Amino acid sequence: MDADKQPRRLVATTRDADGGVAAATHPRRPGFSLIELLITLALIIVMMVMFFGFGSKSDQQRQLKACQKNLQNIYLALEIFANEHQGRFPSLPGAGTSEEPLGLLVPKYTAASENFICPGSKDSPLPSGEPLTGRKISYAYFMGREQTESTAVLMSDQLVDTQPKQKGTPVFSVTGSAPGNNHHKYGGNFLYVDGRQEASSSTAPFALNWPAGVSLLNPRR
Image (cartoon, rainbow, N blue to C red):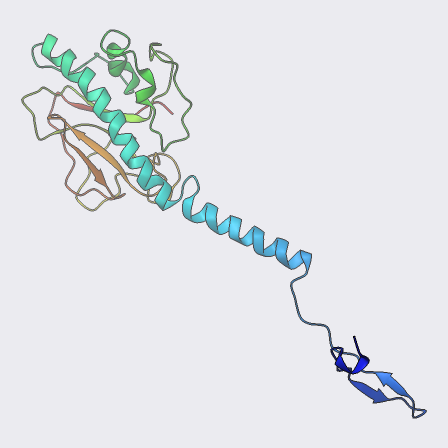
């Protein structure tokens, strides 16, 4: 190929102090350093954990749904128990925590003791079919209810305490700290005597009271 037909390269030149020709230097193009890339990656991971990790709002919204399935499974056992006990749900004189009366369900009325652990909580898993005696569950229980009280609350996620509540007052943790933080600071579920379930924010959507003969029991700490 003739020299005059070869592609020509344009080279910028300049004159040095002695009048000679020198190639011009070009400034380095800006770019990310390895450290900057690592910092960016770390920030992305932190944001992903904040928005989608355990304890985040989106994660706990998913766990609220899974929690409802647990409560529904427990309700089936409660209903069978009540049908065999003249419409009365489990009750144990002198009980101080929800594990005591609800322990009457396992293993006779349900072998799925793992349902008593809320998937949104950090409570330790329970072995299937094992009694609840000496163990910790995740749910509160209104002991003394009967099937005729169809609109009353029968169970719920762990509550901040066992005192009556006015509408709009904290019923589940508002800070994400125990007690009442099965779903961090994003509320919890109520299970009614008729089997209905409702998700709630951290404040009571209605007044929470109960008559004489009914006791609200939280799980052990």
